[in-house]
Image: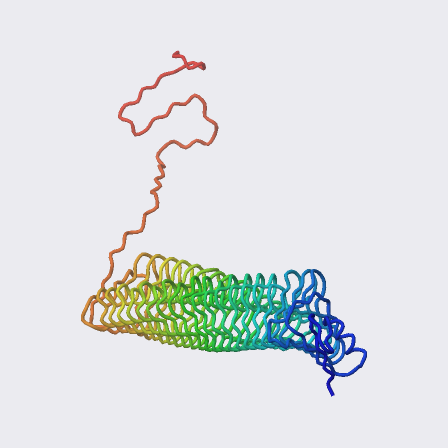
Length: 568
């Protein structure tokens, strides 16, 4: 049987003048109690013990309990609060020291300090409530937050730390100075929430946290929408992010699984993985990224499957000794490169489709910079489908380049290996090697080039076998400068241009063509200077003094001089 207590400052039959008096009476009886509170302002510090329910009988917001300093509500037992406004400063406004605490249709205002503090081994539920300014802190406790609003927290709106386990559902979090939800060395599930205007990452997992984010909307945040760091784990499903600096960030050994998310108009990157961060990203979409849609850098190593990238600047960039595996990726309508691998990084691309981007794949860096591309299509590009520079090494298998300027290019000291690749309808050429680069091609087909099918320049080396060059306007293959290499079992077909412009330094083995092979005029090698030895002069076998010599002269005048050079 629940004992009922009525509180009214105006008095009345069996009414208590303040809440503290009613709580003292309830504690004396030791039974479950319902304390009903009439509308008004109560400047009190409430200590609630046992099984007690505090309720505003005039409805939510009609009872205001406050104090200038210190805790307003200190709960131990099984405490429920309904409809109250609790206001405090410089301390925990609400503190649960033991047992369970439920706050429903309640407003908590913490002008400085903590709004709600769930201490270790307690359980706190917030439902249909509003929390202003202060943070809600779960430390080693259990928690449930449903349909709440967290407004303008001075630091973190919700902090889950020290082994706590909290669910935050269908809530709105806005204007937090630091994070909307921070999970540190704890567990949290954030479901169906909207977060906006946070000063740092809207949702942060750090220090081996376990974080699950499902069906959330995040917009207009100053840093990352979602961030995993310091070996944190977890998952993100169906998140919708708009106008963040970075859509999702992963760093320092964190490894989440991210599925079915959209990242729109992120000011820098959509997906950002760095400093040994990992992560698996499935069926995500990034559009209108300000810098890079998917960025792996400084030792990052993500796996990306089924990603769709549109508009924005760069599609996928792997830089600064990072790695990445990218499968079933669609990229279109960018203002720069679709794929970029720089500076000792390694990337694997499979089943990639690129359309209407200035360039397809760009690589640059030392010999540790590698890119492997399998089953890819590059269409409607303004420059090159693939360009390898520096000392980078690129392998293409089953790659198609169609409607652009240059199919495949390799320069400086880079290496490009082509297997079963096709180039169609390019204006400058199919494949080119220049500088001191090496190009190796097997089963390469170039059709409809408005210039050359294959070109070697400078000191590049081209090793091409079992390949075909058809209907190339200028030449099937052109070799200039001191370029070397070989063509083995290749064919040049069509009615335009010549088969080969030969500089005499490339072996043409089993070339099949009906077009002419043109030997280019080569400049003669520069001859060494001529040295002429004259053996008709005198030969001396001892020291000679005072001698005058002349030969091959028509006239010789001999004249004796003194030791000082004067005439004798």
